[in-house]
Structure formats: structure tokens, C-alpha cells
Length: 185
Image 1 (cartoon, rainbow, N blue to C red):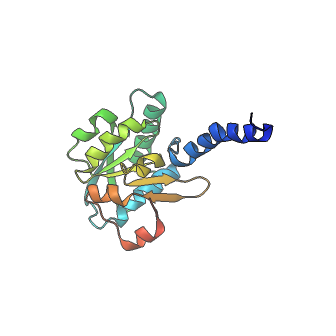
Image 2 (tube, rainbow, N blue to C red):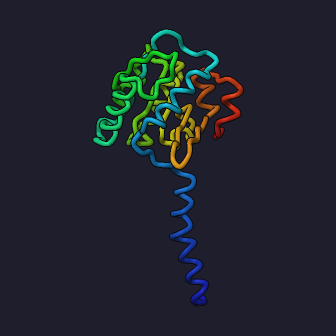
Image 3 (cartoon, helix red, strand yellow):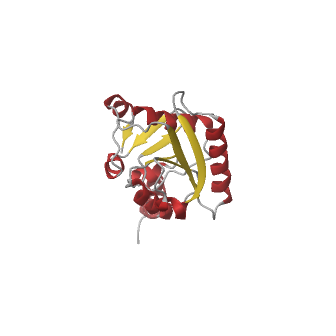
């Protein structure tokens, strides 16, 4: 029979420890995208070495099975179309795209993912990115799994996460100054 203290330690190892490890390594949930998230992500376009010119078509990607995702996508689209968060010098138009339709886009160079997309949807994002699409999300798990190029967190302070593997797969390069500012995953 185990000593009561040893039983406690064993119980902690079986239950509490795996829970905290899952929080650290498995996912970082996305929240509704605000103007600071959007602005931070869109400014990265200015620091691309192969920056698009003219009017940039932006796909705002959402999961139709999630009302939270659809609402966030509509908010992102509204902000982009009204110029909120769009850096001066860039002209953008946006359209809502279901996660199942992202890999069929051929004329889009930028995809901003709304919150609420399940990790299973990240594979479609990765496939679409291979055609040269910059993918940005507030869900850092998308970047950690090398499916999205950039992840934006604006609370409590702005942090931009960067996946070199996803960027390479998308044939996207950034200025070295930008790479010094981001957190590479």
C-alpha cells in the first residue's frame, strides 16, 4: 500500500499535470478578432519581400458550423472594407470564404482566419497557403502546427508568432527587420 502522500503525488501526476501540459503545448484558443489584431496582422503585408501591389484581395475565412466564427468573420470583413486596421498605402477588398472553400481560391494573396475554426480546418489553410497565400490567425495553434504563417496576440500586449516552415511552404519572405521582431515557432 502506498503512503498517503505518495497517493496524492500519483493522483496529481495522473490528472493535474497532463491538464496543465495540454494548456501549454496543445492549443491557444483564439478570441474574437479586434482592430488591434487586424491592424498588427495587416501591417505585416508591408514587410513582405514579395509584397503584393494594387488592390489586395483578402479572404476572411470562417467555419460555417460555428456562429462565433461567422460573426467574427463578418466583423473582420466590415473592418477591412471600412479601412479599420488597413495600413496606409494598401488598398484591400475582402470577401467571406468558408473554410471548406479556401483551397479553391486562386486570386487571393492574404487570408485572415476568423476565430472558431477547428484544428481540423487548419489542413485546408495549409493547402491553400502553398499557392503563395499569407495566412494570419489569432489562434496560435495554427502557427504552432505550421499551417498558418502568422499568429497575432494583442492582449495583454501585441505579439506576432511566425512559422518559418509555413512561410517557406507558401513561398513568402519577410524583411529581416520583421523577422527580428516576431517570435519564431
